[in-house]
Image (cartoon, rainbow, N blue to C red):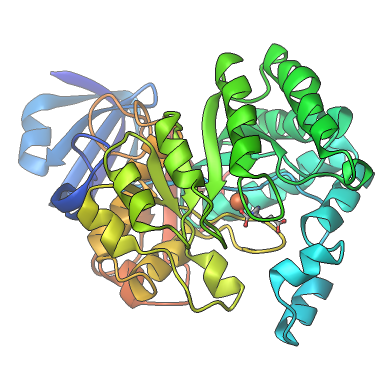
Length: 426
Ligand code: NIG
Ligand code: FE
């Protein structure tokens, strides 16, 4: 018999999202649905997923095992949000009002607002303040079903403030059940003080800040914003080569507004992911389809920027790219951390199926931060990170808009949300 110290009994429907990752093409449509499903875990790891009959035959709960009644609830893996700018300070509500009046995001950036305004606010905040902001945001994420999230720096843009952001992430991660995957994004923008000597800033990233981040073990990935007016493909390549030889995994913000060849570059360099892809070309799609580089789509960005053009999710899926969905949570272009909303936008705005969107937000999200060995799928050997929602079927996750149906969240086999409320650690 298999021993278990945590039992989830009788989900009406369970989307396991099991099977090999990344999920491409038809495989992306299979969420491994089990009706009347039971899940069991030991020491935070899943040891069983199946029907009640199989459970009774094979699982032996240990004394004092936790039992969660999931009767009438729908279960799915905790969301993996593979692209966030979590550790920022300040607000850009003022800039948002200007956008409503017709200014574009890029016009505001050219006027010194945009990312640079959040840089000023983040530099002015202490590490503890940023950590506390992260903790509040992580509570919100968890209450909506996210159990793993990537977190990018990139609002410090100098040595002490980039380190401060990443230390805030590390401290927040130590105090919160949501797992955080830190990414160094000093290459998010050229800071004002380097505006007429951008080469010097690139050298600073390569020779000073990057090595410091690496030596302190503060980030797993290195991300570059390859875009017109930010970092050119040549600059991106120089930064990427340095990042890879320093041992970082590579992520690239590409084709958000203008296609410069950054996606093809990301695939050629073996990047873990290319992110945004709104303006991707046929060559970019082909490059991703033939690579291991995940295509992280961020559908709240065009929605939030009130922009017609969306990432071509259907064409990416049909070509065979490894499509993931994420929030891009940040104060300028995507002020949401709610992955349910992202799944809904994936369906409503990019014409993904509900199953494709769910897999993209869980199994493929985990792949896009190389956490698929433990997160994003409900199958033996993975973390018991499970969400229970009060909806009649998986489809209602998208069909029923504007309300949070999450009742219970288990993280590593511990109940961390119960009846829609956070349970503090014992
Ligand atoms: O992914 N594009 C670059 N970075 C963010 C926006 C950051 C900001 O506006 O503060 C993004 O959209
Ligand atoms: Fe981003």
